[in-house]
Length: 426
Image (cartoon, rainbow, N blue to C red; front, side, top):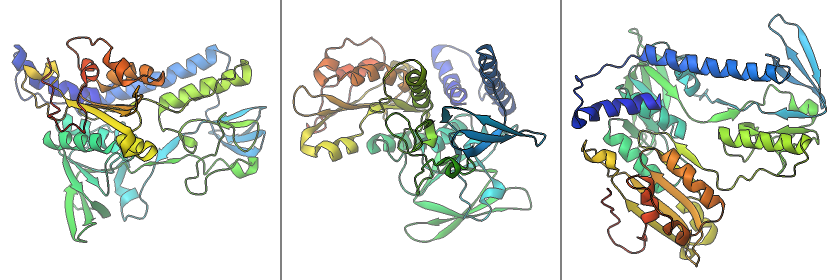
């Protein structure tokens, strides 16, 4: 769906490159949704086929613990199935959280899981939340031409670099997404005409306001899928605050032969690739004679907002908190992607910064990139940072011209210098 929105932008650029495209170009939600859903179904089917090919027994049942070696699942017909094993891995992930304290939230709202299965366009949409999920959903909804508003109670992209987060919001706002900052919803009601009336409060002034929408999407975080597992019967400890499972560096729970990986675990990045790698390494330790542990430092990721934000390592705030302001140097620059030039696109939020230790050899603590194809850019530099790259080593890396990635290896301006950090680009 992010790609669908990007294609909409490219269609607008096309006339500048000589393509005669009649405007406006309508978007067909139903056709897009059907393609997305078919792709997801094909992935699920492919996984089942691979399991079967590898002689892995698959049970499509919801199970819970009976004791530390046994789980009980209930099949569709109501038949109970008991399964016992020497080793058990819990990888149940999380589910979107509903704000059940808000009147009408459960009855009339949907979550980020639901939007991918809507058969009809959500129309005018209110996205409640400031997480990467909230901003990604709002970004692609705006990108395909829908009237979209994001309601943010506190700060956007908590846990990410806040300078970069602010620039993500600026770009989205300048390209049509509306924002209600410092507001919290209090009630959702369905009007006689079928629209949804949302009442919210300004957290600063206490003033109430209302708005009318076709869809309300809750993106206020996720909860671990642990409550129905009967973990207490197996003796598996969870965090009293988050209900996430507590594990050690070997992914082991409080029970020696029970392990947990992914979003269901306390203190782990909520990212699919980390769960995949943690699971692979766990199985290699259990059955392959390996001793390699999962390293959760310098895990790269990307927020797929309309202008993508990729990062690896520490944010500027984390670096300062960990090492002190006097020991941190930040190199940064604005740049203009080549593909923005002919179409005359605004590049004021295209930005890159590298957070380093000030003392030579100036080890890179974090890299933050805002621009096209940020995931591809970040993936490339993640290896170097994982290997302990220094600022000097990055600067000695030859850039590939003309790409956005080369802007990283041209950084020469410190945020302390006071110089104009603008790079003209290609």
